[in-house]
Length: 307
Image 1 (cartoon, helix red, strand yellow):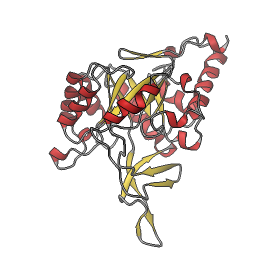
Image 2: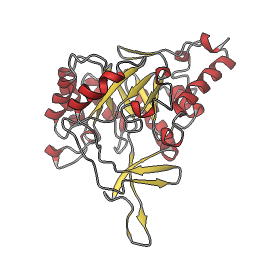
Image 3: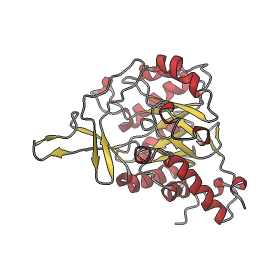
């Protein structure tokens, strides 16, 4: 079997990807930042940096801290806003032979609906990924994704306002991920992606001050992979819709762990900072793995975990 004979195609709800390798929101800019480093046409999908209704400057620096086996970030979801993205960045993305997924976030349920509506009829965006890890100003700042009822309401709002497949990105900072996963499935989500970052902090012992200006941030990288893998497996066994695995995937064997555990696709995040070509290295590693084992379709590996 040669590499071309391996069928790497996967389906995320109504969305078809030529392979299961996606690049995660917030780690790949708006795609063009990597055009001289990566053959973007080989990717299954690009998930762009999270978009709000209006431009957001983000948190003051320092806002990134290296940690053992990972990093903390408190970027504050800095972004150019949905209008500039559609007018200035999307036309170039449309020239690529890969799917483009817009990640959106709001601070009220109505904002999520407005964002979804902004993409209605917009060509070149294949799906929406809904970040529900953001603080809900209507409920005292608690993240939307920590409450199953609120998570469902956000999902319903986006689904009703959107003409595209809806992927809901879940926070791991909950008691039972299965409850949240089931709530957004019942509310109409086409797929879920998880995990978002774990909450953490770091302290400078010389100055006795936080190493992030925001005090705390999101932990990502290899340190969180076992947690991510477990929560993905839990979600896979709780819902019938596709699950996209995220969290500390650095090489092809990491990616295959998620796929064997039941993830239909995976997103590569922190690895992009270490090696801009990590996503394509992972794709090649998966192809080689399948070829050596005479696995003709990646779909045959999905959920093949033996327990």
